[in-house]
Image 1 (cartoon, protein in one colour):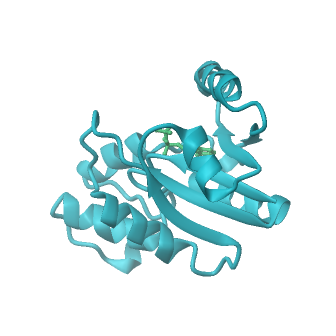
Image 2: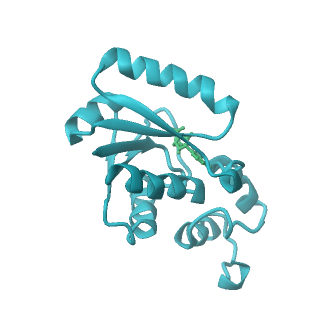
Length: 165
Ligand code: ADP
């Protein structure tokens, strides 16, 4: 089966990556689709986010990376996805995710949304938390893939040393 995993990924975290890896095991194919949201100014450009995800998923044969704008269900139709994959960290995610899932199902009843619960040790991770920690020079090497840690260091003008890993 082909799963569409849509999101902002600004930037990709190890929580996202964990979901992609588990999605691959479950469904065989995961298409990670980065949302180009004209209403938001991302920290990383679309090209940077695509490059981060491609580099971080290079070890996975069932992953494809793309971008989209507009409706998620339209993207799912365009790529021939069987389902939309989303992650749940806490109750706070649940309400929002449920609303989006119902909306998508009302638009395209044939495409189910499947939720995977976060791995416990990634449950605190979000792109915003990672940016906040990196902005003040905190260690993020246990939160994001190395390529993202390097980009964050560049973004906030910090020196990146692999020993921080
Ligand atoms: P969006 O702006 O669409 O919420 P995100 O990049 O923040 O995009 O998240 C994409 C998806 O990944 C969402 O379903 C979110 O709940 C999930 N996700 C984010 N962080 C984690 C994590 N640490 N563990 C599991 N799922 C996560």
